[in-house]
Amino acid sequence: MNDTVNNKSQFIRLTRSQRIQHIILMISTTLLIITGFMLQADRWFISVLGNASEAVFWWRGFIHRVAGVVVTVICVYHLIYVVVSKEGRSWFLDMLPRVKDIVDAWQNIMYMLGFRKERPQMDRFFYLEKLEYWSVYFGMFVVIVTGTMMWTEYLWPKFYIDVAGAFHLGEATLAALAIIVGHIFSVHYNPHVYPMNRAFIDGMISEDLMKEEHRLWYEREMNKKENQQNGVDDNAK
Amino acid sequence: MKAQIKVLVFLATAIQLLFTTPMCLAEVDGSCTMCHKYPGLGRIEKAEGEQAKKTKRLFYINNKLFESTYHGKIRCKSCHTGVEKIPHTNAPAVDCATNCHIVDPSTNRSFSHKKIVDDYNNSVHGEAGSRIKDKSDLPVCKDCHNNKTYHDTVGKQTDSIHKVTVCKECHESEEFVQRFYEHIMYRTSKRRPSKDVVKLCSTCHADQELMKKAGLDAVVGFTYTFHAKAIKFGNEEVANCLNCHAPYDLGFSPHRITSRQEEHSPVSIENKIMTCRQSGCHVEAIDEFSLGSRVHPSPEKIRFLMSGEEPVPEENQVIKDPTFQTKVVGWIQLFYKVLITVVVGGLGLHRLLDMYASRRERRIRGH
Image 1 (cartoon, protein in one colour):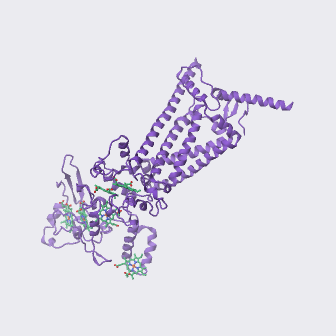
Image 2 (cartoon, chains in turn green, yellow):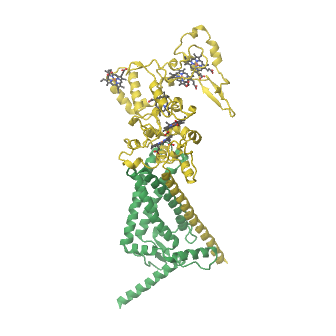
Image 3 (tube, protein in one colour):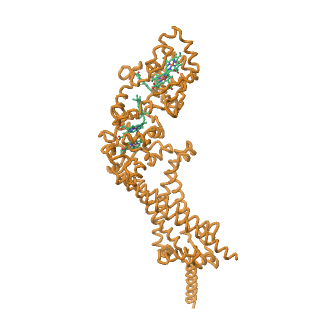
């Protein structure tokens, strides 16, 4: 698959590989959050489980570990993906933070407050998307390392485990809240795409939305398309 | 201490009058149930003080239940030594070190809990072993042995039926094998769910005031450990208070709990690692596993340390803490609190602004 123009009104936002990676990440993270925060559950929740609570406890530990392994694998896979594959490299380059992002953020806030007439024109990924993406790097690094430590608790002094536990819980809380407030709201309750941005399922973005939200990317893609057509024409000659 | 106000003496007086005949003044062992079999037997007591709480005391003994307790073979008078004649006046408190008529087959001597009572007396909870001045804060036998003493579930375990059949190859009496089978089964199984142990010990050890008097940290921090969370779910594999402070497997007992300052305590610096390495636990733990921070640091303590206060004045503090480690955990928690507020707050604010902006857009477009 390549991420160039598909047809007139639809563009490829996410390739198949990216969608699969996203879905695996989404499911395993959800499981991790649920089974992880069950440990913080209060008596009421446990009393609802009744006699099943012991079994539930066993399963939550099991699922948490399996999902943890899956997340680790998908993260490592992603690291390889952004190095090895062409679409991965293009993704990675477009994700790299630039000075423009800071300017964009400033201008966008000014626009939203009503001090500017126009939104800044964004490229393929705008500053919040980049922030989220890089947060996942940081967050995953923290939870994978501390999670592995707690899984192999007997290899570490108790103090390390305490530190790991504090980081694990803190990072998980941060991630869970950031996902709910930042990510889910922005793809579901974005006024442009309500009720849901379907890109994570079919990978497509409409030309309108693209022009509206990712103007620079749109222009880049159109240029590319023109060049390609020219190139094809050149070859034909 | 208690003003015993007899508010209710149901049948009591009537029965007492009835039996004031010499016939009944004779030794009447076993006849205690004559009166105590009546469910109405009891009285309401009022404690002294401002908010006098009324407690209802039941003196009713269910014979069938009594016989299925582990004291079921002991005569009432073996324990209630003060009750000499019937009808009786207030019975004196029971002393657990009393010799009873039951003979211990291993020594052929009459049995008593004297060894436990002595051991206990020298433990940190006992009058001789404790450091504190106000001995009334210490637990007594009845504080911990508040569980029901009858165990009618052991015999019902399905696999035991088969095993009892084996016994009957040689022993004729069904009742005998059932009794002794249960006797052993009960002792080799876990007698108290971890939840109950935690609840029991926490009645005192999570009480800030009480623990401050003893110069100890309140153990409220235990709730935040993984062990406690697993126990809350009903898991029986993780350690409860007793597995660490009185592990039977390592030769300790709930009646010989000692301060961690004592060399032979299972939680002393030297012995801690052996306690962690008990079978079924962190068997392969490295030597450093038990070092460094506290096993159940109190969050109160973390808070106090962060604010620069001392939870217990230094000179009263029995155990000096590795404060640095406790502080580090506190710093991490603080770091994340700030980070979460900034990030999530920022994202939320951004979202709200966005909604505000798009409403404006719609309004402008609508015009």
